[in-house]
Every structure is written in C-alpha cells, then in structure tokens.
Length: 192
Image 1 (cartoon, one colour):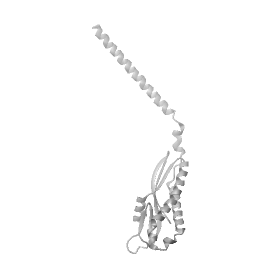
Image 2 (spheres, one colour):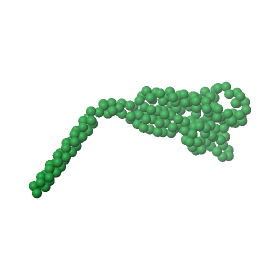
Image 3 (cartoon, helix red, strand yellow):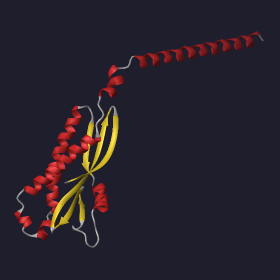
Image 4 (cartoon, helix red, strand yellow):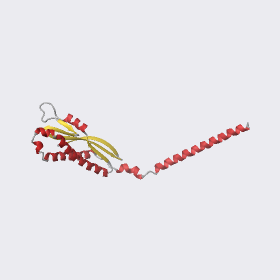
C-alpha cells in the first residue's frame, strides 16, 4: 500500500510542476506582448497624421481643366477633311474621342505623379458606365430638341450638333489611398 500512496504523491507533484510552468510561460508571453507594443517604430504611429488628405474637389478641378483644354485643342486642330462632310464628321467621332482620351491620360499621369510625391496613391480612369448614365439623364431627346443624340464612347459623351459631333462631358472614377484615407468617387466634368 505504501507503494500506491507514493505513486499518487508523485503524480500530484508532477501536476503542480506542470501548472507552475504554464503560469510562468503565460506571464512571459504577456510581458513580451506589452514590450512589443511599447517598442513600435515611431513612423508607424505618426505616419497617418503626416499625410495630408486629398481633396476630391481639387482633383476634379484638375481633371475638368485638362478635359476642357483637350476638347478646345481638338476643336482648333485642322479637321477640314472631317468638317467638309457632315456625315463623315459624326462617323469619325471615335477617332477624335481617342485623341481626347490620350491627351487627358497624359495629364492624369502627371497628376497621379504629383500625388505619389505626397505619399498617396491616386488612380483616375475614364468611367463609361457613369458617362452613359449621365448622357441618358442630361441629353435632351424627343421632338423639337435643339441637338442630335448623345452617345458615350469610352467615358466621353459626344452629341450631334448641326451634323457634327461635339464632346460635351466625360466621366471619371477617382481612387485615393494613403495612410490617412481611402476614397473612391465618380465625377462627371463638362466640356463647357
């Protein structure tokens, strides 16, 4: 019998040692976690406050100025072959829209670069779905209208006016990401 009692005592002693060891490990993990939280990199804690939040209104104004300048430049280029025939002018709208988009894309790249220097990501792209919705809501239709139909071509809304086409608006999707913000907006800018 004495042998059975010693065996129970040995088990009890082992269980107490395991319990004490678990408590020591738990205290060590807690201490390491607190130390890790206190020793963080200062830039991690203050980085978000150091980046200025981008103004979507400012971005929209820049895009609008670029779009208007591109439309104005396209209107003043020599398009005698297009203007000579009113039907061909309407048919050639895809070509002119491509040139307008290319001009604006160059300006958008520069704008995105400026924002990258300010530690934020800015991505601006043409939004054809928003342009189509805008043309349906804002272009007059029906009898007695002053102008012809509107059409959205790759995010640029064009309208037939006196047999020629005129770019009237463009829609853009703006995405801004920085340590201080994450914003997505859709804007429509007019050519006039």
